[in-house]
Amino acid sequence: MNSPPVLHSPVDHATEWLRRRLGRAVLLAYVAALLLPEVGLWLRRPHAVPVGPAHLTLRTASLLLSLVLFSAGLQVPVRALGRVLRRPKAMLAGLALHLTIPLLVVPFVAFLLRRTPDSDGGSGLLTAMILIVAMPVAAGATVWTAKGDGDQPTMVGLVLASTLLSPLTTPLVLTALAPLLSGGYAGTLAGTSGSAQSGFTLATVVLPCAAGLLCTLVLPPSWTGSLLRAVLPSAMIGSLVLTYVNASGALGSFLAQPRPLLFAAALAVATVVCLLSFTLGRLAARLLRLEGPVASSLTLACGMNNSSASAVLITTSLPDKPHLLLPVLAYGLLQKTAANRIIARLRPVSPAMSRV
Image 1 (cartoon, rainbow, N blue to C red):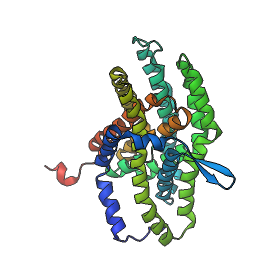
Image 2 (cartoon, rainbow, N blue to C red):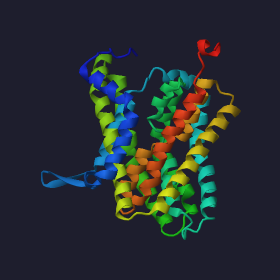
Image 3 (spheres, helix red, strand yellow):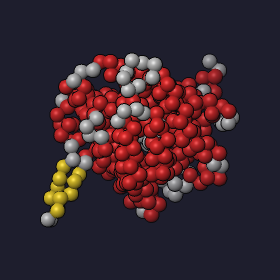
Image 4 (spheres, one colour):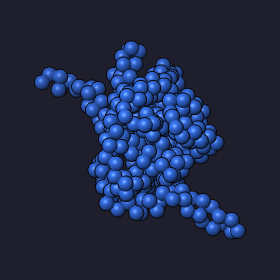
């Protein structure tokens, strides 16, 4: 497939300007949620829009997530995936690890939490972590793969395959890990699993990504380029608004009822899960003796889950438990920090630098 023509329009320059400052923009979204959560809390609520005699319920977070994933599908290099399908070892290993690592990491964290004085054994934190690790590989992992000179087709294949399989894998992981929870959280997770199985992952995650991929397949390259130039900046802004909405839910409830110990515990648990996931991915890449770029992509895929999807699932299915968003937000920041360290360590050294 021919690449869309590159046009240096004001929109292109604005998109590139925002892309270079995306990290700082995410931090500003968190600051805005801390200082002005009211707008984000309003956006979190479902809104009924009259359509003739009936009403259509719109959820801002779900719409924004769909926009981001449509943009991700639109950017998939379809022809490059052929090489991955001809040599599928890395992608199949990545999918197997994506399912296996949660079954290893979450029970270990549950064991540690049961040694704490928390009356429910940290079931609230575990619920949030389970909802994170059950999600597909984050579409943003492709950005970090490009920065680290990783194997982009492998990463795109992992993102696409884990997303398309998520209506099956997400309920499977949630059901397998639910027995680790105590109190009412086991029932809460069971209800969330039912929501995921009944259509959340299909309608909010799979269909938008598939729609973007379909546009890439059927539209002429010039049309695809024009559509991408229109959608990409909107998706980047939508991602920032989604971050603000999710952070408002978590930080708004935290400011209303400050619980410093909960915040510290959420950060600690998110750190342990994130580091273990990346570490196990790195060890698996070594055992499989994968080449540097492919090993980098596999490692990133093991640690980078779609935390935005888990936050939206919590917002829609568990609106009465906004505190569960705290570990989700912490994980979202930590996985980006860890990814930055990983690509810095795994990036190939240029011949000029090796002679220094």
